[in-house]
Length: 282
Image (cartoon, rainbow, N blue to C red; front, side, top):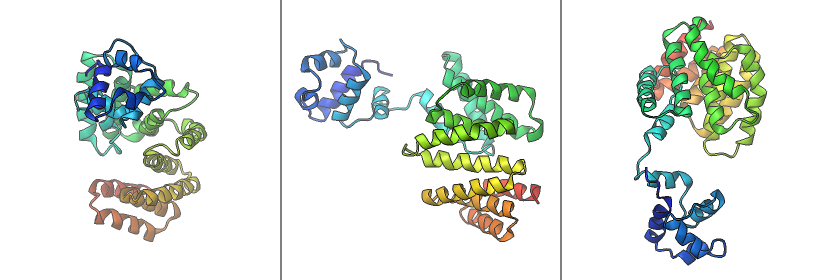
């Protein structure tokens, strides 16, 4: 990772054929920009945001460039963690666990530590009976939830983390957090990719409601999830929502329609998991 941010910025600016005057306008003094570009002066968030806007580079892209056009190992772990959508991806979960452990041997990092906690819990969920989760797993989840429960305003990352630990929380806790969760989601309704997270949350919540025999409430949640799934054109989400709606309403044809869709697009692992659900709720 390069820490000479000013020099990196200068390389971007000159590479685009822009003069200092082209990016400063009347917002930043050119002498100030020279000091920034020579790493002789730090700058405020607002000024850096303005400067990046002038060269049409986002914060994420700027970090990527500073890291020599590679994702950092930390970002790689975080990005891969949020691609895990099911405990059926147990091999992926365990591989990422190992990567977290290697990373944490070199540097202490709260975010990676928390991800490792959740991955450990996911791994235990796959190997244990869901109704007999051991004390270690409960302790791991408790550490994460204790922090989240004390936060007044949940950020996008907090919402993603809640989604990851939902299956490990007690049902009364879930019922209590849902209103706050919906309020947080509403604040992010125009945020990039929020619909994917929103739909995943709804699908997971619906299943937990089903497990606790809240079938009418689950139908309402799944109907909302199905509408979002169609908007996203996510066949996997459409299939899951359709099958679970069929289970809740005892509509065998709807269940068959959802399973047929998933079979057609080759979601074999999902099909196997849903077949187990169909049997368990029969």
